[in-house]
Length: 92
View 1 (cartoon, one colour):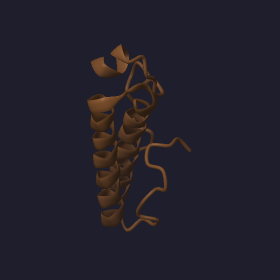
View 2: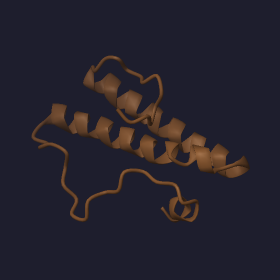
View 3: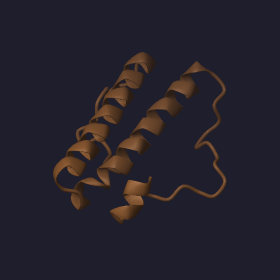
View 4: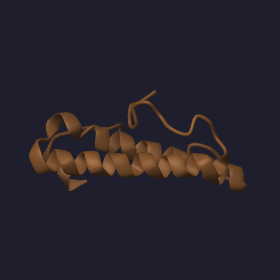
């Protein structure tokens, strides 16, 4: 988080009180939450790409890729299609 602050990159700020985006009551909703979290992580790393260079940009891209791969794994386990996103970390 310090790196994001230092680089003055921005992602959607988290609310002061953490609240799940939906109720998690079973395996399906837990898997849905896992995908949601990894997609959010990808968005945070993607925000660093336009404001970094060199090793920092490589690091941000690596973390973005890692979160996209984890989200794909969760989608596969949850049997969600499509498994991948064309532009991981892109809002919407």
